[in-house]
Length: 327
Image (spheres, rainbow, N blue to C red):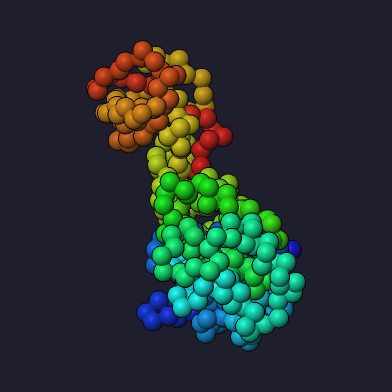
């Protein structure tokens, strides 16, 4: 059942337009909005938060909230740059919501946030000299202290050292679960989306292109535009595998089998010419011409140890029907 529903949402910010944004978010869901910079992801979050004048409908818990002021929407917002108050201590930043609303069980919530987020030693410090990771934890604590029912995260990993990315992603999941949140997370990073999301909306040029489970969207794009955005390789006409077909398909480089002999047992088999073989740490990248098309193939080095083949030689490749992604 929908907890938050965006229905044909439109918004104009300067020269940028959101166009008929529609998707539903379930209660307790970790929902990721994925797209390039400038696609409109942040504008969607700001529209949900009530920071822009918008058209369409915005339904939260079966109630139209378009008319409500931002502070009445029970939404916490963590911006990409964290937007902390430099003139306040860490303690006062976290407790800022208490200045304009009554916080239920405020002391216990504050103590739990400080302990869980490891902020004990930072409480009396000012914001200026804190690290990106520390600022992020404080911004999240401040947002949760207001007891939101929905948490909006705008590129929360963009200011974080890549070395700590995995730890921070786990941390975000833990926060989401511990405080019973419904979370909308904006990113351009496929890995983030894959790890964190229950469901994903892909946004491009102010439009929603595809919505579905994380696995469905990342593994089965429904259009060439989405497939190219996700970095899909080996996009060909289905005429290559079905003479009567007239659409496109893609095959993952990891799902293609390779042999020096014509011995492969799979649904689709081809002979080709090796154009290039690149050794990359633990795998090989092969570029193989089949007629006018070129396949990109990835194979694990340990599975082909001692096997050598040279540019210009014939090589056989194949894949199965179940691995084909139709676009």
